[in-house]
Amino acid sequence: MSLDVIKVQTGLHINILKKEINEILKPPTSDKLLFRRLQLVDDLKDNGWQDPLGGYDHDNRKSDDEPQTSFCTHTYKECRERNFLNPDCVCGLKWDIPAFPEMEYTNKTLKRLGAKKSAVSIIPPLTIIPLHKDPLWKLQIPLETDEDTFFMIGKTKKDVRNVNLHADGAYYYLDVRQYHGVCNMSDKPRIHIIADVERS
Image (cartoon, rainbow, N blue to C red):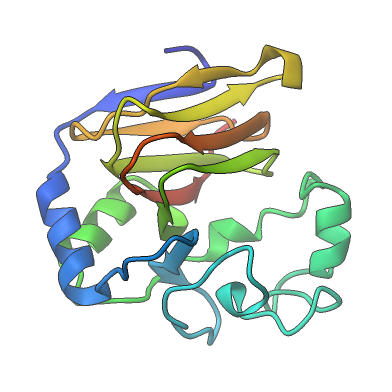
C-alpha cells in the first residue's frame, strides 16, 4: 500500500454488516449502479435504492441550481464546476444522522471510524466508474469483491494504478482528492460501504 491507499486491518465483522444490509435494506438484483445512504442530514429522508447516475432522487436535489442541504453555500452546479475542490465544500462531514437506527452494528462501526455521508455502493459486473476527483478522503469497507475488481488511483491520469481492496475485515482510507475510479471486470457485483472522512 502507499500513502494514498491506507489499509487498516482490524477484523471488522463483515458478516454482521452484510446481514444488517441484506435484512434491512434488501438490496435488489440489478445491472445498474446502485447506492443507498446510511447517514443523512437536515430533514432529508431515505429515498430507497438509487442509481447515482440516473438523476436527482439519489441526493434529494430537485435541480443542479439548488444547494443540496440547508448549510451548503453553493449550488450543486457551482460545486461540480469546481470539481468539488473549493475549501468550504466539505458538507459531507455534516451527514451523520443514522438513516436506519436498527442497523446497530453498522451504525456503531461508522461512528467509531468517523464516517460521514456513508452509503452502500453496488457496482454491477462489467462496469467502470470513470476517473474523477472528490473533495474529501473516503473510507471504504469492502463487503463483496474479487481479484477482477480494481480501484484505480493516481495523481495524474498517466500515474493511475490498480489496487485490489479485499473483503477480509479490513477497511481502507483512500485519498480520492486524486484521480480515481473503479473497474469491475468480474461476473459478480462489488459491494462496499463508502463514506467521507476528515483526514489531511
